[in-house]
Length: 133
Image (cartoon, rainbow, N blue to C red; front, side, top):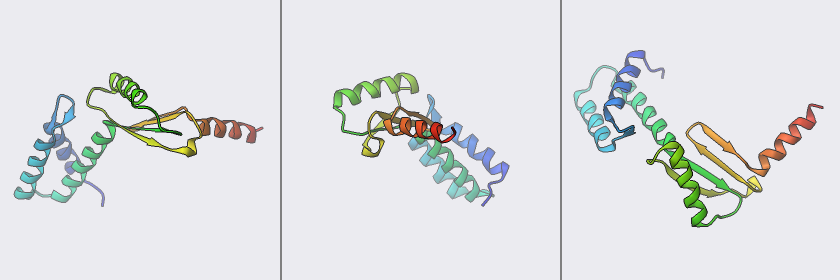
């Protein structure tokens, strides 16, 4: 279902209202949604869909997924988390995963930003450059 411009605009205003110090205030957002459901404005479903999408994007922007080929120590995780927080802000959450398929190195995804220093990506780049020859 396509979301109307009006519903998107209202959802954006509600999202801004729910943000405090650059991040979403979850209790405030919950109250806004409850209030919307009670008042049943025109386009309620579209507004809630757009609002939900904005919340999902905000959560993704505040979550770092860090993949390594082997488990790393808590000290290494702490150092990586501190560096990411210095760049993305203190409200960032880091999720560490072991992904043996990357062969070595590290791959970090924060929202739509991807930092890929994995061995697999380097091998893929070399293979692609050889195919074009």
